[in-house]
Each structure stands twice: as C-alpha cells, then as structure tokens.
Length: 304
Length: 304
Image (cartoon, rainbow over all chains, first blue to last red; front, side):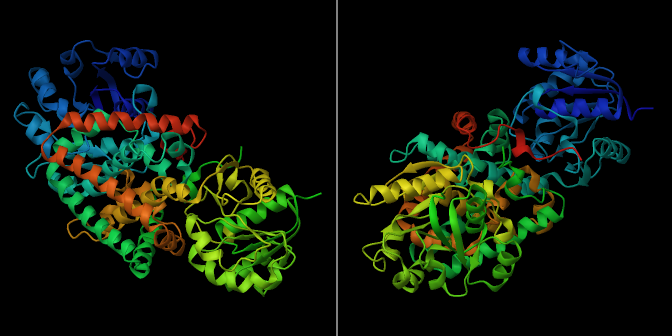
C-alpha cells in the first residue's frame, strides 16, 4: 500500500518534476496528478510521462488528493490558494517546497479550509537548472527536508509528511518557520544574492571586457556564475518574501566585508590570515557531515 | 630534445607539484630540480619522485637552470630573489605563477641580474587543496596561462615561456601586468574575498548555530566554502599585493550590493528580476568558452 492514495503536484519544474520522479520510483502514491501553467512544460511532462494525470484545470488535479504540493514560485501561492480551496479534500495535507516559510502561512493560511492541514516544507536541494527535463529522482537523497508546522499542527499529518520526505531519501528536520527563514537567509539567500551581484558587477565593468571575464573565470568567478544561473522568478520571490532576515544577514555580511576591506587598505596581513585559516575548517565539517563530496574542485574533470 | 635543459621549481605545493608532474609527463626538461622549505613537503616530494634533484640549498636548485619558476606565496619573492641572484645562469628565464603580477617586478626586479629575463606568468587554474600530494599534471589543460612581460622583454624568451605553458596544455595570453591585476581582481580576488567573508559571517552568528549552517549548506553556502578553503598564506599575499585593484572592484561590488539591498527593502521585484535574468547568460558563455563543464551542480553525484 502506497503512503498516499493520491498526490497532486502543482508546478513541475526542477523541484516538482524531481518529486514526481521520486514518487514514481519509490511508489509513494497510487495516483499522481499534476498541473503546470506553462505550455512548454506541459509538453515535456507528457513526453516524459512524469505524472499519471496531467490536468488542464488546477481543481481537477487537487480534487481527492491526500497530499498537495505547491512547487511554484512563492509569489504565486496566494492566487493558487484561492483557486484550489473549494476542491481540497477533508483531512488533506497542503504543503509546498518554497525556500521561505513564514510567508507561506500569510499567503495560504487565509484560504486554507479548517479541515485541511497546511504544513509547509522545504527540501534544501537543487541545481542551477530549471524545467521538467532538469529533474531527477535522487535530487533529495541525503539532503535535508525542513518541515515547519505551526505549534498546534496535527501530529499525524506532520508524521506522514516526514515519512514522505524520508521516502524520497531525505533527512527530516522539524523547525519553526521564522527560524527556518533566518537559517536559510545565511546558508542560501544571501549567498545567492552576492553571487548574482558579483556576476552583475563583472558584467558592467568598463576596464575589463566581458570576454576577459569569461576567459579567465576559472580563478574563482565561474563558481559564482553557477549559483547566479538559478531561476530568476523563484529568487525574486524569495527576496521579496524573506526581507527581514535577508536584510539582517546582509547587514552583517557588509559589516564584516568592510572590516576585511580596511585590513587590505592598511596592509594588515595578520587579520586577513587569521580569517582565512578559520574558514577552512567549515569546509571540512560540511564534507564530514555528508553535505558535499570529498573531492577537489567539486570533482570537475581535468582530464579529457 | 626537451624544450629546456634544466628547469628549477621553487615551492612544490599544489601548483608547483602540478607543473613538475606536467614537465615529467610532457618531457619539457632534461633535468628538473626543486626546492621547498617545508620539511613535510620535502618528504612527500621525495616519496612521489616529483623532481630529479630535490636540493637542500636553493642555490643548487637554480644553478645552471634555463627556467626558474617561483611557485611560493608572492610575499616570499623579495627574499628568494636576493638568495638566488648570484646563482642565476646568463640568459636564464626567471618566472613565477603568482596571482598578482605588477608586484612581481617590484619584488624581483631589483635583484634580477641584467642578463636574466624576468618574465612573470600566471596559470589561471587551481583547486582549494594544498600541498605536493594535491597536484596533478592535467591541472593546466585548457585553462589560460597569462604571461606579463615588460614592453622591452626579450621576444625569444617570451616565446619560449609561451611554448612551455602550451606544452602543459594551456592557452597563452600575453597581457600588461597592471591590466592582469584588474582582470584577476574581479574574476578571482574579490570572489575569493567575499567567499571568505560569507563563511566568516555565518560562523559568527548567534541566532543560527554552526551545526545548522553545516547541515543546511546545500542551499548554496557549501559552494562558497570550497573557495574559502583555499591556501590562507597565498591569499593573504594576493590581497596585500593587489591592494589598489581589489579595493576598486570591491567598491563597485559594494555599490551594486547596496542597490540590490535597497530593492529588497522597498519590494522592487522588477529590479531584482531584471538583474537575475542577465546574469544567467554569463554562465552559458563560460560553458561555451570551455571554462566550465556543461553539467548541473558542477557534476556533483546525486546517486550513490
């Protein structure tokens, strides 16, 4: 018996289509329905047979579903919430995969019926690519899925959602939504912002040509361009919906950067060296925790 | 006949030992001598047979060499220059692999005899690892080696050094040292500084624990920790010796970041979206130029 009778996925881009593949692989639902507003995506979803039932109306997709997962940019949630509310089954779990969590309650809370369990979630996994063709079922393997229920959430529903993510290969952490948003501001949102920013700064220089930036990118810059190639709509919505935590972490980042800038200006080598030694240990701990591979240069192939 | 009768490498860490391996593989010298001040490195160099002649005196290593390559942190150059000057062969090429180039003339110029060709170089390649055991001969394959001769440099010597780097698999670009320092400030130095900085900021937070930073690093942060795991001594010396260009580029970076910060504060989604769309194209161009691999997530393995 599958974990759920019917699961509905709204939005089948990188994350949604990876979930769909995982559900099929691990047989987590008897029926998997899907909905996507993008006509190009619809064709790819059909060609790749990613869901059992690709619906043309969002109401048909969520009808009778025991678990509904929104995998669209966070900015779409309010509208989707209103569109689906009258189709939601009693006792269903309404969840999502967005990178911000407190805002989910603001956007989906008002439209969610009382007999439906709104339990946001966030799988901390992804690549810089987009679209249903980019997904793969092992995307969540050994990564963390953070579930952010309200204090009075139904424990059975939370347990079932936890089992679902464990079924996809993830470790599960239960966390308060506001704390989630602070943690992710520093581990994901601000890193993305500064990656986008350095790529923008490099593009706009007068003295260094774009061709030079590209040719000599292997000195470090190219790593940032990968992150800065992530989905623009998704990231716009992240920053608009985690304003407070992002601005706080960004303030600290800028303060620290100013201190380094000052050390460079005044030739204070000891301050620079002490800083550069301490950061090396964090890399080691991430590898030891299984959150990155223990290979040089991300395992880039140097032999052809 | 090998390109050089004798090559001497001073410093056999990641870069120096990779050059040594490449020289052996491609038979670019009849004799390869080496010198390293670190006793641990000396043992590894011997065990791995990285050079024909590992000298205990730096003068013995450079004596009779037709090409001498400094592969030590830039801050050591002045002292090494004084130590080796009386051993340098007439007509020899004195070069290096440092990430800053104008400073090389300041540090090695005064001690270099008139009949020796001082021609700095910089292979734009590397990994976050250090030490002779981390090197590999294909590190420079398809990467760019930038050679920064003075205007009145001996053309034969420049040509020979170009052939050497091409022999190691690199593309060669001839560039003015000051321009090099500006290009690398944006493509390498500032990216490293902000990577070190975000890792430092994350480490020092009170509200988010270090364990959380490590667990949830797959959201983007882990990419930065790779760069921030680079050799601290080398990077301290880079910042101390490319002060002007780094401060200029850093000023632009901060200015641009402030604009993004303001867009977040005021909820200006259009500014954010426009910015995030433009940066995506640069990634594509880097891949098309052969400077990174065309695989998602740097080709990290997601299946076990």
